[in-house]
Image (cartoon, rainbow, N blue to C red; front, side):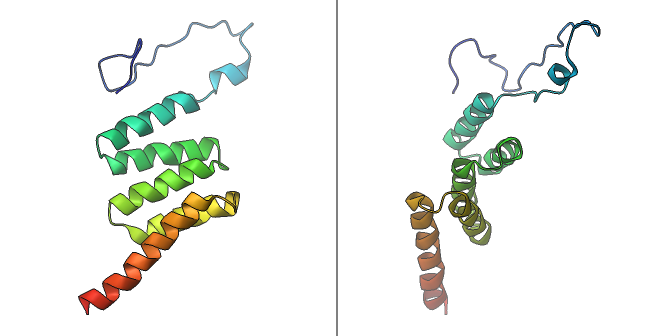
Length: 125
């Protein structure tokens, strides 16, 4: 889990910041509630607990903030694969590959799933 000054409560505490409308720029008021680093920590925590659905939800938040995060797409694919949702996993790997064509780990994971699906067709028939 997390270390440092993190709350023992798994829900992140949100503290309302005091601001002066005359001096606080509006972009500070619309900033994301969590930083990418905090979101990645949540993903790690969920994956450590095998909570893949929750990890996917956080990965989707990361992708909304940084659409070109090939690592987020890759981990999203791994999470779907762990849930047995192979088509969604392959689609996520494809997104990672689209962003970084030489990302061989995504290619490898995708090919493993495709091979698994091919073999399982023959075994189940």
